[in-house]
Every structure is written in C-alpha cells, then in structure tokens.
Amino acid sequence: MLGRASARLRQLFPQQAGSTSPGLARWHSAVSEVNGWLVLPMGFGGERHVTTAAWHGDKVLGAAVARELQAQCVGGQDELTRRFCAAVSNEHMAAHLDQLLPLTLLTLLPPAEERAAQVHDCGTLLEACVERVHHSGGADAIEELARYLLATATDTDADASEGEGGEARARREANPKGRLLELGGSVGPAEQVGGASHSPLFRAAASLGERRLAAEGGSKKAAEKAAAAALLASAGVHAAVLPTQRLGLARTASEAVGSRASEAA
Image (cartoon, rainbow, N blue to C red):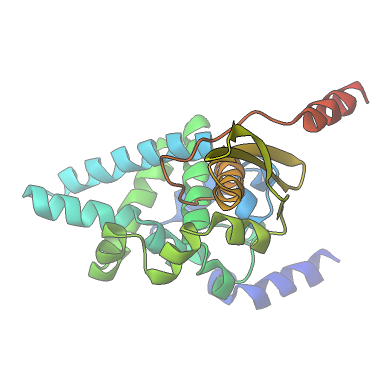
C-alpha cells in the first residue's frame, strides 16, 4: 500500500521524486515536520485561522532575506528594494511552491494550474510554514530558504510585487462575494436593520464551513460585499474591501450556540 502511494506521489510531483531541490535540503527537512492542517489557508480547504502565523512568518522571512542581501553586499536602496520585493512576492512563492514544499503538504493542495489563481493563498501557506519552522528552532533552514528565493527571483517577480498582481487578481480581490462563492461559501440576502429612509442600514451574513460572520452597509450590495470580505479575511483569504464599509465582525448567535454545543460534546 505504501509503495503504491509513493509511486502515485512521484507521478503527481515528478520534480521532487527521489531528489531534493538544490540548496533546500535543510529547509525541506524542517518543513517536512510541519502539520499541514496547521498552516493550510481556508482558500485551500483549511479549517484554521492562519493569518496570524503567516504575519509572523512574513516578518521572519523578510529579516532572513534582508540578512542575505547584506551578506551578498547588495548596495543601493532601489536595488535592495527591488530584489527584496521580488524574492518575497506571492507570485514568486506561488511559482516555486512545488520546489519549496514537501509532498506531504503538496498533496493537500489543488493542482498547480489552479493554484496560479490563488497566489495570495500560496504566500500565506509558505509564510505560515516559516513561522512553524522558526518556532521549532529552524533558523538555518529559513536562511537557506531566503537564499533560494533570492537566487530564483526574476524581474517579472519584482514587477508583479509592485501592483495588485495582475488584472485577474485585482478583479478577484474587488469581488469578495464572488471569491467566497468560488470557495463554496454563501452570502445570505441582506436585510434592513436600521437607518432612516434616505440613509438605510443593511446587514448580511456570510458563511464558509463552520465560520459565520455578519457585516453592515449602506446598501444591500455593500452589506453582502462587506460580509464576504470580513469572512474571507478571518479565514486568511485575501480580498479587498472599501475602508468606508462598516464591518460587523461579531459572530452570530447561532455560531456561538454551535461552538458551545461542540465544546460540551
């Protein structure tokens, strides 16, 4: 059984079969110990809130890349910024995910062609892995990862990191409701909860798996968009939301009751 499973993994990911990517031996050894369900974003079917871990991992990785740039004697603020942004861009990490992660993590993800439309999720995943490796004392492994990212980054990665990451990504981020529906979530119809006739206030609830959040807006569309964006943000999935939209981030009573029931069980 194990032999057949290993053969199937080699068919899915031939670039890792029987060998380790050059310069990543220590990183692969360290990240192979990471429990995938502790770092998997909701965008890839995870069930945990990983954005905090990814935030810390981003800072740890950024510091490692900065140290490597200093070790390479890279000079000039513009050149330092260009190379740094290229190395840590979501687009760059997404393009190299098959080389950066072990098979145990890659098998939890959709195919590479599908991941190409979820570069932010790819970045979140890798940054969360960095945080776990850092927590386990894998500083040398992270330094190795930083060197790899710098060595493989291109001008295209630098250009992508300067903007929204392309028109397709910009459209996806501007439509959190559509993004949520793509992931199998839902947004209930908004209902008026207050306000005057000339300035009504609407509330909508969004759900994804066991998560459920409500948000308010000055129109039904705004409330539904805000609810979807709030839920995606809580799940570690990137989506843009206008700063003027008022987000009601409190969980609904039904979720609270469900959580208490689960704890009691």
